Image 1 (cartoon, rainbow, N blue to C red):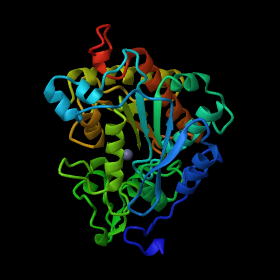
Image 2 (tube, rainbow, N blue to C red):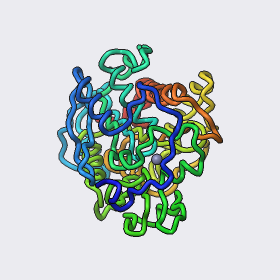
Image 3 (cartoon, rainbow, N blue to C red):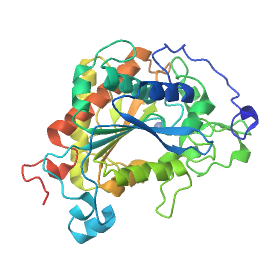
Image 4 (cartoon, helix red, strand yellow):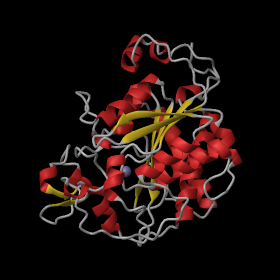
Length: 365
Ligand SMILES: [Zn+2]
């Protein structure tokens, strides 16, 4: 069964601090919450993972027209972005994609997504706390929520969080262990796509069941995982205006610099949002990292590909994970996710996600 499959032998089998009931992060729990509590929004299967698990897409709010004659690349070449972007009203309702659980051991945003569902549907998170501002802001968008993009990695890592474990455990549960007993590690894992599973004892939460890390499955020559194709198709079809790609690490909360090779205005916009979020988290005692001012994103990854698919503001957020070296409680981690959703939405309402819409000129025909 599952344990004998390549990459599924969890040799450490550690136990983090037990998760509260309002932290439902297993694929089964995520499915149950979205199936049972989707009323105002709609729920559909975006795709099945390599391991045959459901990847869900929750949609809420009417969007802008998406009729078009070209893809983003052709439209940019034509100097008439309406070819892809369509003719939109100046105050069209923006489309925000919140993407959670690309890496299976980064459960914080998965918990955030389930709690966001309950806030959108009933006004309260699963702790019973009201989020009126978040609910009100969300109503101004067409919201696309993928609560768990990599259910294979989530099922494989099993543990509900990394709270109370160590940074070394975070690395183990993230990228896994070779059959030699050596930890694969963050950069080590990126030497392979897909991971050669016959050489791996435990493949951690990063890849799907075919060993593919969706974050780097973005060659223009084609994707190895159908999850990647489905996500990028969603971005293209919906003309997504901003994607918030939720991740985790051992340090404090932080929005990273915008994905590489975008126009300067996207970096400036991202820095402004990062500063707003840092200030909000600081005020709430949630110990954010310093904003990486003047830095550009490096490399080419899923957020980069999303930017080049729809011209979206493509944001990458890193949450702390509550390891011993940088402790956070479950309550704090959930607050960080929800405040990040809220501040991102507030930024979208106040500044518009697409930088060329920030001025009064609007940039549209
Ligand atoms: Zn990640």
